[in-house]
Image 1 (cartoon, rainbow, N blue to C red):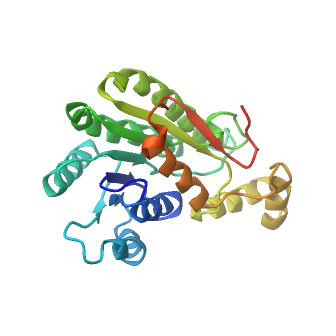
Image 2 (tube, rainbow, N blue to C red):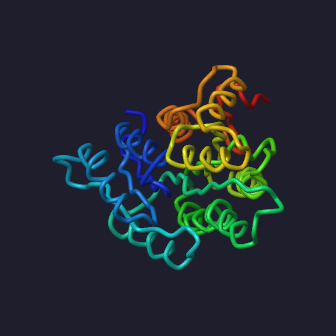
Amino acid sequence: MELAGKIALITGAAQGIGRAISIEMAKEGALVVMGDIKENILKETYERDVAPFYTGKKIKGYCLRLDVTNEKQIENGVDEVLNRIGRIDILVNCAGVLSSYSITELDEREWNRILDINLKGTFLVTKVLLKRMISQKAGRIINIASDSGITGKKYLSHYCASKFGVIGFTQSAAKEVAEYGISVNAICPGPVVTELYHTDRNMQSKIKGIAKDKLISEENKQIPLGRPGQPEEVARLAIFLASDAACYITGESINISGGLEMH
């Protein structure tokens, strides 16, 4: 197994890409701690999809209420993991939100909400955990950015700003902590079928005055592979970046968009 014996903390783990990464990492032998603010959904996801991988094992993964915008809560959560398990080898910053508004209709509160969770949250969790990873002189940090962090898109100015920020933060952090044996990389998914995908397509449909099915069909025509991605496909890239096979990769932002974004 690719991650046997590793300890992974995954934020935004209750649903979507975070859920898929949690499952795949558990499948690959990692002890997974799933963090999310949606406690009920998180608990159900853990018990149904992840806990079975730890049946009969003495040390098990678990779920943790985690608000990525609250530094004190992050500190307490990380300390809890360290007290129970002893270390954290892998951090996946996956907590994120998405909405669609024209710039003239976007209010400051929504701008702040998107930036706080997507960008500040990535910074805060990384900051807290780096203090521990530096002392152990090892670690893998994987930030879930977006193809919207590489190329701007209509009605997503706030989301694009947050994800462009995540990519810049990833590059800076990678240079800062390389001397401690810590790698920092970003994954940039294109459209991926999750709860957020459908919520955003509903909003885009209203803004553009186009039926949702037609909007999705037109979007798929722009993707060279002709379809949106699946969370499991993103999760497998995260497995690679967390594994020993990626030991010489840091500061990268890797597209997984069916060819929608190429560079």
